[in-house]
Length: 506
Image 1: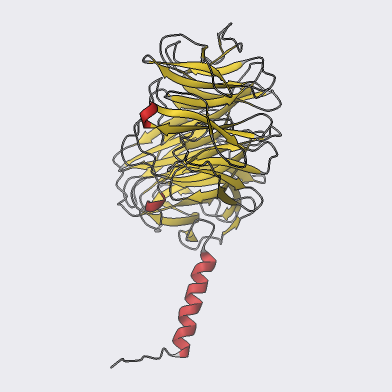
Image 2 (image 1 turned 45 degrees about the vertical axis):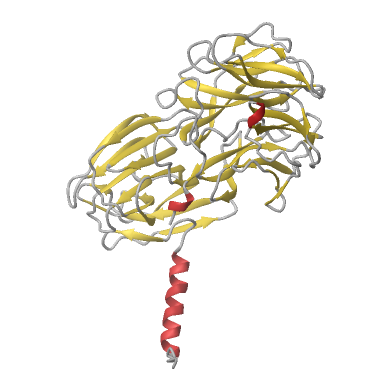
């Protein structure tokens, strides 16, 4: 016998109303927003989907001393995570200690323990924290001022703040032994430092990353979820256009600007239509174990692939029409990792291991004798032609760290291009020939000859003729983020992959 229960209409209305109210309180990726403190002048929070920005207004006496008052846009989270945003104040300020930033709190009580990464109205940038409920707030001041790039990472009871003025590398500080419990309130905040005044902050490129559990190296299997992103090089505006709970890698921009090509962790190639925001598989016949070393010919008609063939030594290079078809084998042995085409479409350049050494090679597009272009001891990798065909750029450890080099197409006149504190990989020349983009690993995280996934890395650009470098994207990624050419045809944007453990997101 089945028992039937009828829910009273009034109760149904109350439940539905509660669900609607809760949904209305959601702000973008966050679950709710609230004025923390007692009798705080009401604030507000709005998410703009078209620009992926958060506009948050808040009042309150301060975020300091033994209690806080501010507007908080938050979600509850457990475990380790990395918070990232570009934060700006809107309008002129009343008090120079108005504040914007990231905050992690044990509770929503005004006197709660917390850690926050904050920029003040006068430019002061600091890591602030309250160790226990009602304790006095402490502060680590950064040397830089007016930082608008704020990152806050939690590793157990250690909190790491990274801050930068957009375009520059991070400065880093941290605090240990702050116990906020496993489940915490995480979010963006604005405080006016004046109970009678509401101040506003605008937060762009907001991202919460769940990092890889463990220490990643070149042997790490890529299992985390992926964000396909596009960044405007001039402004640094980032847009996540596609998210998946598995690994996709190395987007190439089609020469007509209408789509991107990437591979997934299984080795299947996809064409991602930018108008429909949908990927479709590319027919590559029985060549279906493709890695993230693939490149499009300058005329946009052909796609070069690097496919794992174990019995031939590993990665083997193939070519296939850009729309798909029957692949044609180019290199007879592996490992051979394709990175670029010559502008005339007659040659391919690749990184090949021969006799225990990785060097740069050139080979006719229809197969034939390989021409060895480098012979320095150690790894030479990532070769790519300039659009005018006058140079081949590559990266090499010959100087002691991984730096960008270039040479003539016959291998002559090899010269170093970058020389800094980072390990720089995979130089990509913009189609207009004016810029070089590359990915930079931190030396203290990665040895010179390695480019693992799941690291804090920069995407940087520098003028082709030389000059200062600029960080255009601060990302969690590395291997597979930008291995091969990813400039838009108009040289204004770059496509790349960032990573997060989607299975752990709430």
